[in-house]
Amino acid sequence: MEPVDPRALRPHYGAFLRPGRVLLTGHSHQAWPDAARAGHLEAFEAAAAHVDDKWASAFEAAGAVRASVASHLGVRPGSVALGASTHDLVVRLLSALPLGRRRHVVATAGEFHTLYRQLTRLAEEGVEVELVPTEPVATLAERLAAAVRDDTAALFASTVLFESGAVVPHLADAAVAARARGAEVVLDAYHHFMVRPLSASDYAGGDVFVLGGGYKYAQWGEGVCFMTVPASCALRPVVTGWFSDFAGLGAPRGQGPVGYGPTLADRFAGSTYDPTSHFRARAVAAFFSTQGLTPGRLEESYMRQTTRIFEGLAGAGLALVSPTDARARGGFVAARLASPDSAAAVVRGLRDEGVWIDARGAVARLGPAPYVTDDELDRGVEAFVRHARSAS
Image 1 (cartoon, rainbow, N blue to C red):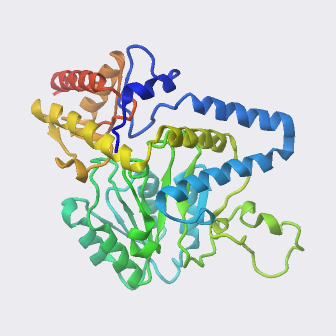
Image 2 (image 1 turned 90 degrees about the vertical axis):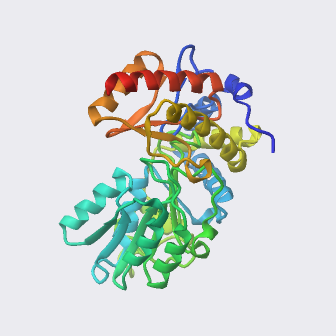
């Protein structure tokens, strides 16, 4: 497999890769290839040419996004529900869970704010939410499985933790255990998608929901999130948009229960949305295909790049929270600083030098991308070490 060559890719990112700027935000907002602009313009032209009839073109773009997600996760396009955010999709799913009789929900304590905040609010309303500590990661899946009960409605877990970048080992075993007790399994793969290969079938034979989006590693930008729906799903979301039964809009009202469309994805559809994001995502997905940016090649690129960052930070004696083994971490390296204020100061100081990173509390994250050169990685690491020492 031929390695990804950042220098060969860089001419395709002319708008974002400006002189003097080092983007180590690959785990958050990656640069968009110039092809993204063509997608934006295509959305505008479709609206200008067809006005309200633009939706035929918009649905074609959405179909291409579903097909791209399906090809990477090994599912059928009709099982891929789309949403503007993962929160939109999670809320629809939560509304479908039988929380009246299964009042228990299990999640890791390291889930992103989207889920943590929503589950915390549900706990205030009487849902029993059990948050399992992420450390030690080596036993996290085992402890998740042990937390699932006969009254557990769902198990929520990230395949790669957003703070440390650690890949959660043996998560497939936890998925099997949860499904055996009748609990739904929802895997947040946002930090896994387009970083390393991922197949839904590896988890309980695909009888799970997989969440993700294109804002980060896929370079699709905002508004392009997805949730794969398992073939066994018969859930009926209470929070349901009118696109969930688009073909049945002309049927008489009040004739039986609320219906859902023929595909699995229809159950979790929303309503009118800005289709620009799907035009953009389709254009970028085509660019990735042309450039041969497959999950396998990207995995090798991220492992090589994060190893270079890890070794540079470790050699400077910084406290790293990401795994040492490249195969045990996702697409970024995280370092713990003295305090949240110290981390914020380091982020600001680096930005003044044209080096872009981010922080979550006291943990700073450095994320490469396939277009970032080794020289840029080294410059970013050197600047980070310097600022981290000053802030300590």
